[in-house]
Amino acid sequence: MSLLLNRNQFGNAANNGKTLPRNEAEQLFNDWVLNLRLQLHMKQVAALMRSWAKEKEGLDEEGQWRWEMAGLLHDADWDQWPEQHCKKIIEELENRNVDPEILHAIASHGPLHFGVEPETPMDKMLYAFDELSGLIHAYSLMRPGGYEGMDVKGVKKRLKEKSFAANVSREDINDACNRAGIALDELIAFIIPRQAIVI
Image (tube, rainbow, N blue to C red; front, top):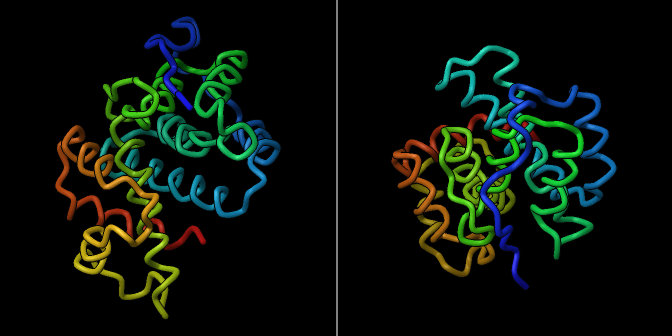
């Protein structure tokens, strides 16, 4: 099954800066994403995107919401329409006149799958958080204390175990870190405490 989007332009430049109101984005999320585990993953990625936008990019509330919204909706079509993954949510958001930057971030969160290269900081961080967030959450589920006391060393040990969370692409994680110019240790250390509060 090919998920290639076969295009690199998304949305209309006239919609630069336009986001969905939070209640509309959450309604779309609730209507499209029925799987509770996927809901949690998307909320965790959204929280990481918001935190990074605030702490590392220094963005204001509006800017933080743009990043958060990209995280919240990046997998919105995976639950009910996996064969149209990425394509369907992008088309939906295009119809709702969403900022092309948000659309491009969603389109590039898996360049090896969708064929769209991450270019902006938003693109690169959504790609970087996606797979690694999933692995770290899987690790929390096997620890008696969950996220409490989790450290970078423990996460890296699980990363090396190919059988652990085998569906998580180690290739994507390494590629994402390289593209974002962030050390794996730094990214893990950023994720653990901020993801832990979204459970």
